[in-house]
Length: 127
Image (cartoon, rainbow, N blue to C red; front, side, top):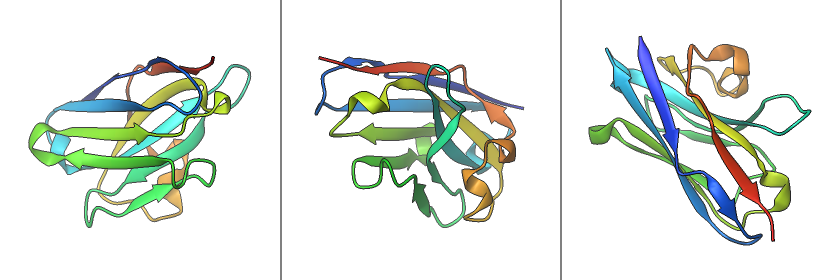
């Protein structure tokens, strides 16, 4: 069992930055690939970014590529999502999720791939 706790959300003006953290704990927490998803009101949960455990390959949704960066501190069992040049359409609850091993580059983008989820953190981009 892996527990995930997100933090770092908040209110930011358009063009600003935030860094979200996802702290993992539990047995084998270091051997998981981690994804970031978001869900805006009235919309389905959508893929944002992910990082494979093996190889460290990263993946991004087209809407955030070039603005968001996912990184990992293996020693701290923490994954980060650095979000720059934020837009109002980035407003959502952001979730981190974990799955054992290394899913394919296709399946790593699917909500159904992931075994464990955090509680979410609100990100609001508004002037």
